Image 1: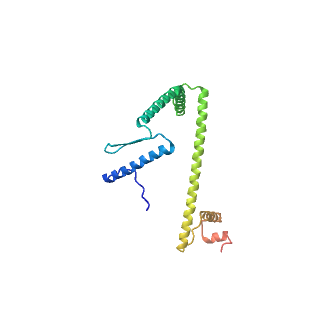
Image 2: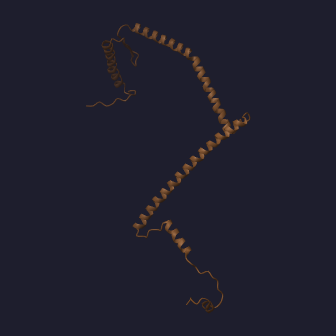
Image 3: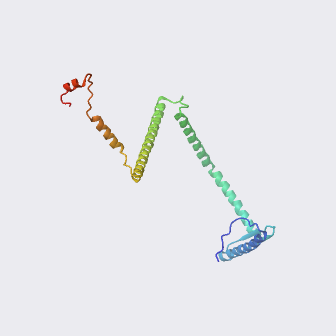
Length: 215
């Protein structure tokens, strides 16, 4: 039977919690012993139960292992402090360089917004104007690109709706609607027809006499 995955959270039931502690404590002590024997490692393990009871294992001497650990931590702390002090000038130089870059960027931003232009020379203003024109050109190009993309999207939507409309009219037995191109051609045809626009006042016979071809 496959065991379910144990959730990593506090066991609420006191009896189950105590049983689990005993099993895992023994397993941990066994693993520490095996590690010290198989790998010839110096191992020290300290466990306090929920009630404060101490369980420990040491492959040599607990006190010697703790002293060795404390000495190691002290030496490491001294080395870290020495390395930090040695590298401090470089850190300060990098911080100063970064502060100067930030200051230059802030100054450039103010000038682009039209502020703090009093100290600028004529050449500086011309350079700033060129930068703004290039930026404006890129902005307009991007704007036009988005504009045409939107137009193409709307055209595609129009075609899709036209196709759906044609299918619906076909299903209902209706004649397909004329396309805008056909309607435009028909309008041009009507406008191109000859229409008699001459104004004539008088009895019909006089008009017939004037135009013999009219019956």
